[in-house]
Amino acid sequence: MMDQAQKLRFMALEKEENINYNKPKVITVTSGKGGVGKSNIVVNLSITLQKMGKKVLIFDADIGMGNDDVLMGFLPKYNIFDIIYNDRSIDEVVAKGPFGVKLLPGGTGITKLNELSKFQTDNFLRKISSLNDLDYIIMDTGAGVNRSILGFIACSDDLVIVTTPEPTSLTDAYSLFKAVVHFNIKTNAKIIVNRVLNHKEGIDTFNKFQNVVKKFIKADTEFLGSVYEDNNLVMAVRRQEPFVIGKPNCNAAKDIENIAKKIIGNTYGKSGKGIEGLFKKFFSIFS
Image (cartoon, rainbow, N blue to C red; front, side, top):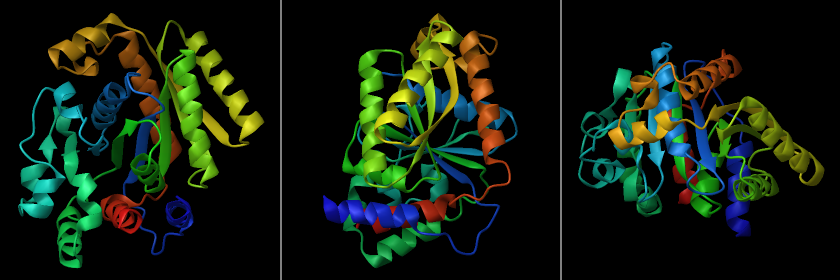
């Protein structure tokens, strides 16, 4: 575990050279436990950013359990595995969703990254580098604390943790962030509180989380916002139609819009790793 931790620290702290301000920001969205609505937030947030004029790629990195495609109402034929082993092109694998949001399905191909030859790695990086017209890469990981998720967080520019007001959700979110800080991967996390009854509940929930973090692990947190518990969300999932499209004026859609505006404000003028930098770090960490 220590070897892995040292590698994660090295990759997280490594300074970027030849900064290019046109590189997209890589945002990892994760949660301490499943069932908090993380993927629903990723899909609707990505569509909202795209509607605001930003170019977004969702990288579904939830190994074996990814469902971003289902939430958007389509089923891609291929994933990263097909790029690596079946010589599929980026255009064949990357699906296009509502308003032009792109989706790169990770699938089980992510688990094969440590098995690649140099030729396969170089070939994959050459192909993936063609995805250069982006503002944001939003990486949707699985839930919990494990090697893969910590590695994904280390590869990103920003970490967003989704929780709910439920005590178990908060506890698991804290455990995740504690591990991230313990291994010196990141010292800051942005928090979204999902399924709140009102905005006061969202602020109170964040304050609870922030107070515990400051007391025990002395790290920084930022409140990105809360999202209302809304029956429109349930119906949207059943219809496989993102709620920001089907019910753009509902409370949850307005909350997502406010979060998107805050993300744009936080990242304006800042350099990101970009798609090629993201996968170079993947290969360095998981090899």
